[in-house]
Image (tube, rainbow over all chains, first blue to last red):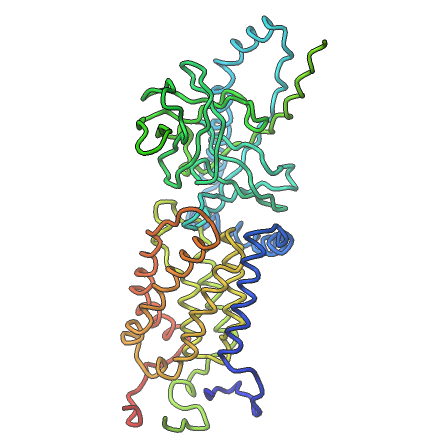
Length: 288
Length: 178
């Protein structure tokens, strides 16, 4: 027993190996519970709420140092205005992207087909406050959560295109799984010929892939892939990826295509969250 | 094994490790890990929390034990948003190894400690990656092993800095140690 001023006079406790085995058992129990079931959501939520103020403070060390260093009022005012304008520009570029060109054209086509117009989805801007340093997933934490009206499953976009999806909601922050995560996918449509595909992440920052592609599928290098909107999660017409390489089938019956994400996945600080579409109404059964 | 003196001597007598020092330094390390680091550098980021924890396991095993390792692991797990218990298990394992070798490690100076702790710091990253794979979290990014190497490289400056900050004088060569 090491001699420290805090050493007990009478030592009656479990040995080190026994305590270690106990802790390992608890950890394995937690791991199993968390991997297979969602029973620990409350524990995670509670601890996360406790950590949140800390993360909030730590996400702005640069701004703090700037504010301490420069005590010119004009500087501060300019900086604030700059941040506001940047946020606004992101919003406007997003709006421009998926509305200006497609909106007019779509409206015409919809009227032509006598379909109801799509309800306008609202956009909220959020800031990325933390990137999750984990080798297994591509996730970021944003500073908007359940109290701001965000829900799980909502699409996240930026000026370039689709970025990911809100996968876990906390009271004051949310976790966004990026499109490049290995378990993340998005239904898309080839802009050139309307072919419907599913794009999934590969775990690499700059690469997406279309797995299980039909051997004769018409897909070429340079094709642009936009969301198709048939899943009821992502609104149609958000740019997702551009094909950079197609691979003929080796040893498998399926071809494969690699794409480059169009959105700045893992590059920008601000993202926009869209309200998801209501799931499409069930197809009316044909009358006999 | 030679009998140890009943009263604290040398470095420990001059500046005994207090609970405030342990908690404060661990909090600073945790905050450094929680900073929003650039995406391209994430895999180079050493686990500072673990390093400071192991430092205290060596120099104040009464204050920093398995329970503290478990709690810190849980906090790290929540901040990573991955599996709950993954880092807790790795921290407990690392703390267990250090606590069982504590008497030997305490006698060494920081450069020699580095050699003794290198397999441990590397093994922790390997353990996390292996456990993540075992519990079905897709592909592991093996570049993260490099963060273990960075931790090994940073152990010496970290130990010296901690010695200075907590007022522990450099260990004096005692004739009893041979």
